[in-house]
Length: 438
Image 1 (cartoon, helix red, strand yellow):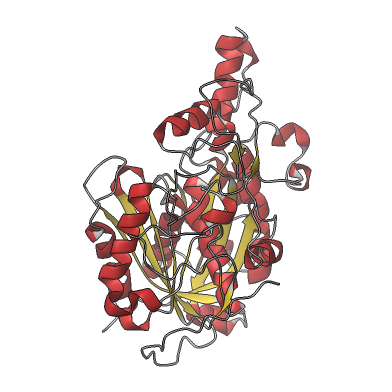
Image 2 (image 1 turned 30 degrees about the vertical axis):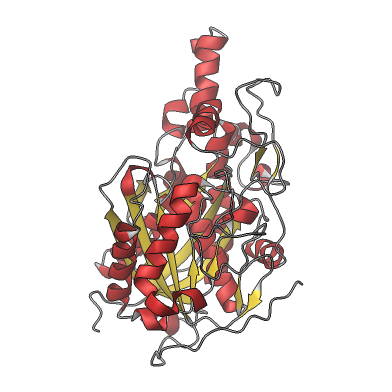
């Protein structure tokens, strides 16, 4: 099958700030061990004994030093998510060798966020109405809550003068930013793009309370708080963080001697046009976007080695996703490993897809498929190989990553291993099941 789009897009840099760790090596090591990074959490905005805010856990970022990225007087004016993006971007650009190299007129950025500025909004409203001090609102607050706050600071910090887009596409924001960034390169508008997602909306009472009512697991216990595909699962757990990737033309990356971590071989965006929150229970709409990404990549479903799932641990969503994977992979679906890393780090909303993509690429480089933890007993309707409890050694040449979100948005990426992207693809044998703990 011929590719729809050229050129091939290389991934040459990864950066992470997330509950599992504040850099890629740390996050990968902890994810490989199946460590839980969902923790007890209390909001500074609400009494911990409030009877209606039942959930007291979240995927929080810890030990993050904002002063490394902005002076304190500037840092306190920014959404925490923006600071996470600055840190993750610095790691990704450094790994790519583009921290201070390349034609800056030809390097741009796309950053997704589901609820950009939610925490700053809450602070401003509290100042204006709770404290009756509208004059106490910072003069740059209106700028700091926009969807371009992250891209603006990233562009200034790294002099990225190419295409710049702040993107909001619900839970698919991170993966959608990767798709849109790759398209800028394919269209010839940029040579390289810094792409990803950032989120810290769980720190906002407005967002937190809304999600408590909309499907979060009403728990106060971190253990087993987020259990994708498990029988009796009760919903998602909010998280925060940022994931950033550097994309560039494959030929350009090779010409300058950059390490090609993976190749974004294909991608797709769609909408299921079904319901604002609930997915199409048949999974047909999600299967359609995955098939579109495979077609864009020129990859047959028989060549897929692993799947990085969206897997929010909602009763309807996990079943629909399982059905979509069955529809795409057919008879071999039960033999293809499917990872749900939200079980470890929670649901970072707009940043989720970018964090999970960075983890998946890092794991692919390490010859691993990451685990789904706390999966004691699977839902009978969720009958795939979810890699329970521990990482698995398994060579992955082709990986599918998909993400879905409120409003019916859906996205899918097809990633190929950077070391053998030129090799012809063939259908893979069933994986072995030698799981391990580091």
